[in-house]
Image (tube, rainbow over all chains, first blue to last red; front, top):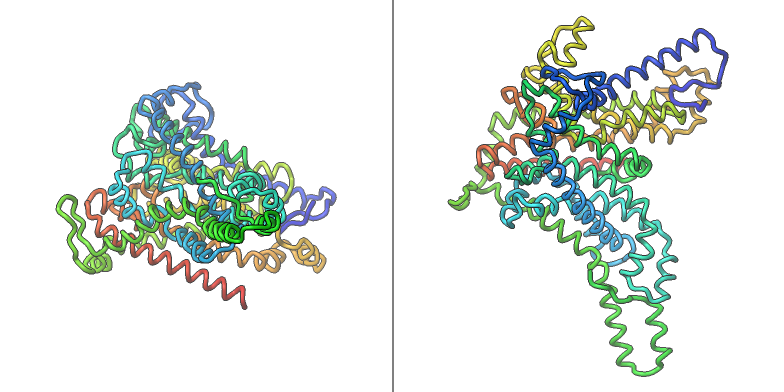
Amino acid sequence: MVATALGLRAPRKLTARRSGRIAVRLFLYALVIAIFMVPLWSMVVTALSGGDPQLGQVYLAPHRLSLANFATAWHFGLGRGLLNSVIVEVFGLTLQVAVSAFAAYGLARKRFRGAALVMLLILATMMMPEEVIAIPLYLVLGKVGLLNSYGGLILPIVGWALPIYVLTGFMRRIPMELEEAARVDGASDLRIFLRVILPLSLPALGTCAVFGFLMIWDQYLLPLLIVQTPKMNTLTLLVTSLQASQEQGEGVRLAAAVVLMVPSVLVYLGLQRLFERGLLGGALKG
Amino acid sequence: MPSLPSSSAPVALREPRARGGDDAVVARTHRRIHRMNRLSPWLFLAPALAFFSIFKFWPSIWGVYLSFFHVRPYLGDEYIGFENFQRAFTDPDLRAAVGHTVLDAVVAVAGSMLVGFLLALLLEGPARHVRILRTAVFLPAVTAMVAIAELWGALLFPGRYGAVNSFLGDLGIGPQPFLSSPHSALWTVMLVQIWKAAPYDMVIFLAGLVGIDRQLYESAAIDGANGWQRLRAVTLPSLKPITTIVLTLGVIRGLRVFTEIYVLTGGGPGGATESVVTTMYKTTVVAGDAGYAAAVSTLLLIATVLLTCLLLWWRNRRENA
């Protein structure tokens, strides 16, 4: 076994002391599972169960499996919320990654007067997250007529410093020779960006896409301010608008919350490696 | 995006030799290439700068400007000088909200780092079962805060039959009020925040642990150090820089807490969990006083900028020392 901070050292005979340690370890694993996994598990199971648990009660084991909770949530606008969130996600994420990649190319591969100032401005926006500027942003969006519209939900989340920062760092490390070779062949900047730099930056683009996905999917305060009619509800707004009622218990609300959770979990499980690399690379600085 | 002409030095070198003639044309081409060369980075940066200008800088500056006004829809804004700021500094509700926010930021961040560190120690290593556990434990961190808040809002139902309370009942502990009592609501919110953030901190600590030289552990072990001594002498000192940075960034980030509080308690009961941003939101949406909300958001922006600069200054000084 590899030496770790508290790790067991070289394999030894199974003495009483050692098996005691293993027992402690197993107990701690169980504790971790109970604390971090059981609540999520109970959410999924309760959402999928029929019957009517009292308020505050959840099932730990499936109970009369049924999709009734999802059907009820659908009746209250789950479908519309999901559609709106997907629309915001698709357009927002595409724009965010594209705009960031262009900016990163300019910053990483070009030397020009004012580059340091631009980088400083972009990093300064990290100190202006949605929550801090939410109220004036809401007023600005009102001024330009973007309240209660897809534009109002999508455009404010396009400019994000984190992916620009991550992509700039990544593109700087691509050898200049590759670019010069293309340039000798007469390729334009745009062509070099699209044909040489972007394909080489795919891992970093993936990382940015994962973080951008989660950032957009979790949006709450901005939609809360912008959306004024149920038709424009995003998934997060829909989930919080469902009230638990005596008849339905917690099932319906948790069903909507499960629909909100599943895409993020799938993205994470599917792209775990990209995600963890980003977490350790640029995300710390966010 | 307009197509960008080539801006290449090699072309500039080739052209005059190959054509061998018209100096004026060559000079014009040179100037054009030179201009495009200078313009090109700005064309690449233009979309990002446009989005930042409209949706970040304009609101930030606009917010500062509005702080000096009594904002009245349909009636026109009225300039009132520093009145909004004076009110902010004397408003007992805002003072309470700042208190909750700072307490919440410090406790939740410190708590999740502690739990994250313990998780990292427990789940460090390349073994398969540990890897699976790590992935599983990380799920709360990627799940949307709204979903997490809904889940815990249900589990922490204050009655005797609430999920957590009935579990506590099995352990012989009486039912807790959790979010329904002003004395425990903020602490309960912190527990939920720690639950969501600890796995995230775990990953950061795991990376820090991987970076520690294995030989240090082994030589410590040869010197007869037990697990606890190795932890204190090798692990903790190695993790100190990353800990300080993550902690400070977390606290700065914690100052803008909104979603979990708004969904779990709505700021209640009786304002016991009101944070700066929930106050701002309600001042705008419920009380319709956007000027005052803008003043509060300006102060929050100033606090964020000052704390961030302080962190950067401190980090620079450390790196240069």
